[in-house]
Length: 328
Length: 275
Ligand SMILES: Nc1ncnc2c1ncn2[C@@H]1O[C@H](COP(=O)(O)OP(=O)(O)OP(=O)(O)O)[C@@H](O)[C@H]1O
Ligand SMILES: Nc1ncnc2c1ncn2[C@@H]1O[C@H](COP(=O)(O)OP(=O)(O)O)[C@@H](O)[C@H]1O
Ligand code: SF4
Ligand SMILES: [Mg+2]
Ligand SMILES: [Mg+2]
View 1 (cartoon, each protein chain N blue to C red):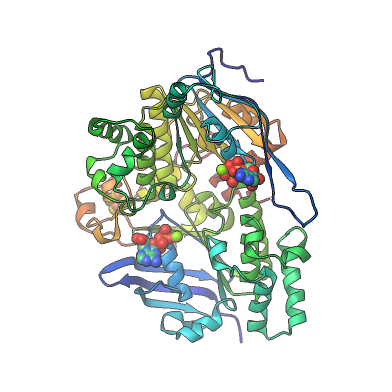
View 2: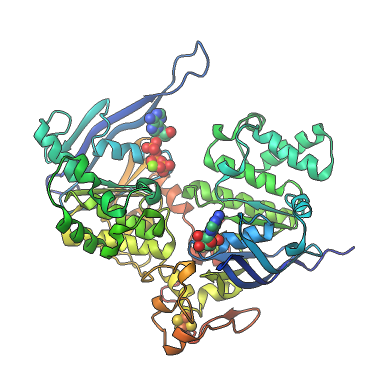
């Protein structure tokens, strides 16, 4: 049997709880071995999208649409079927490893358990593979680390343990939700480097969720920008970041702190997007970004724009034309 | 090297050293001692904005505890307006505690979830024992941070992270401080909101003549607002300079590693950000 051409095909995904929708019709495709970034401010629906894909939505929330992965539609799968897939064909790395690791079990045992459950190898073999993985994650003193409890190791080390666990069974798709947001810049770079190498080596596909654009630029080949539960722009990462068409994407890029053109006396101003992300229960009509958009017109206030293509696309009535300034 | 400001510093640490005793590793072992601050000299002048960067665990937060006088260093001197903070009389100490206020990284955990914003804003004055009707002051600080008065009746869960950080800044401004210490105030915020809060802190320095100590992991975050940045590593200040100089010609290894670790969109697109 040949491997499917796509690791993930999401069509018209909607995530709701009663009247409230956190994800409002999202479609994207990640080819086998591809890497897509999902970017947007907090509350834009990134994590809800990921949890819907994993079948791990919080109580009260439900998903509609279709999510094709490994020849099945995950939306229609039973809890049992989904649970036997998690860690095997798709796996997830969360922002806060402390809350997703079992606090009373040694980290090595937790990795070994995932391996035994999905591959059926014996205990000795699972322990051997665990130690191998922990070594690959460049953790110091691997023989001791596997015997540690989660609270006995640092945040960066815990995140590497989570990545090791997610990679243990060579999944077709790894979803990483803000995997380095809680880490400092030096540790962040180490962890991203390891994740990058490990995903490449296994030829797994990656869905990288973050509000940090430089991480997406470094790790992904395509990107989807989310705002208020919808994808407002997507395409190859170089094109979207060099010539953004939606005004939200443009605003995000322009508000990145850089050291270019910095004044010596601490008087430089950062460009910022005015206002806030709207609450889900009170979304503006038309383009949800219009109260914050410098180019908003009457039409933007009344009619909602749709994505204008399938590969490189933006959902905007008056797309920006020129490249972002100051990008050297 | 960087020239020291000629003005007299408003808040200063001189030769500050702090050690902690860690838990015993085994029954008979001596308790190991960790030197968290090691002979720190640090200061901020009146109306000056300075930065402090360093990797996680380098001692930045411990340093702020010395600046605010919540913890007494084992060695060295903490002074405010030329007076030793730990030998001043009660009246001077009260003045010092009012004058130095802090904003923390995570606004959600620094505000009481059961308290209306209006009550939270009064908290610093109450704990300092300042009595009276503060309604006018509350409205003034809300204006200063760009929040509407309707915020007063609401609870923290009704606000986004960026709005909560404005509220935390408003609360720190209530006692009319002379120094604001911001310990990673934007690390937990989204990029576009981060920019709003950084610009706000710059406005406060300009408009109110506040002194600012701005702490971050990322040099570029403090570079917009400050003209002098200290780099910390393992309890010491290893380099002091203007942000641009530290960025273009870092000398200390810790500065080089911080500068090198920061990811940029352009280097990412060029394909060698993770080399
Ligand atoms: N009360 C304490 N007892 C023992 N060790 C402590 C105590 N407070 C801090 N430390 C240790 O002192 C060192 C410096 O801690 P500090 O919180 O000042 O670092 P930081 O630079 O603020 O780090 P971060 O960027 O992660 O906030 C760390 O190794 C920390 O574990
Ligand atoms: N466990 C939950 N219960 C109720 N609402 C939630 C929960 N998790 C997220 N939400 C809501 O769903 C929306 C989208 O959130 P989320 O997907 O977490 O955003 P992001 O990951 O982009 O920051 C937000 O309005 C958030 O408040
Ligand atoms: S549709 Fe209108 S409001 Fe929305 S981003 Fe485009 S120009 Fe701005
Ligand atoms: Mg999230
Ligand atoms: Mg700290």
